[in-house]
Length: 87
Image (cartoon, rainbow, N blue to C red; front, side, top):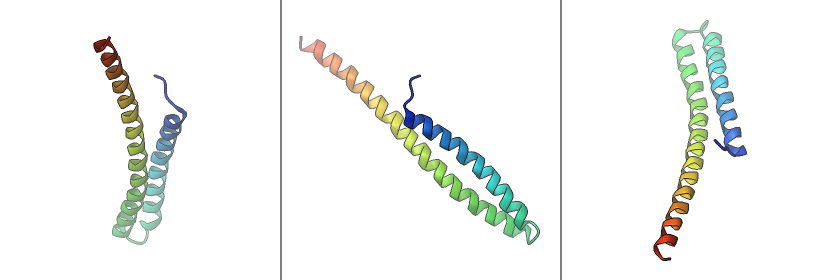
């Protein structure tokens, strides 16, 4: 499959963000675990929400790129059909 540089960068960033999500949630949980389990759990959820927001944002960008490619393909096919109809 032919992918653009933007898609490659987005895929790379998604992998980095998933790794950062796991590391930061574990780090926050274990650093606040000594204070309170509830505090550790709530801060971990807050940190996870931040990273998940960024991940969803990049996934939306990826979906829009796929949608644009599909629309271009459909337009090309419709133009081909139109050309054959009027010849």
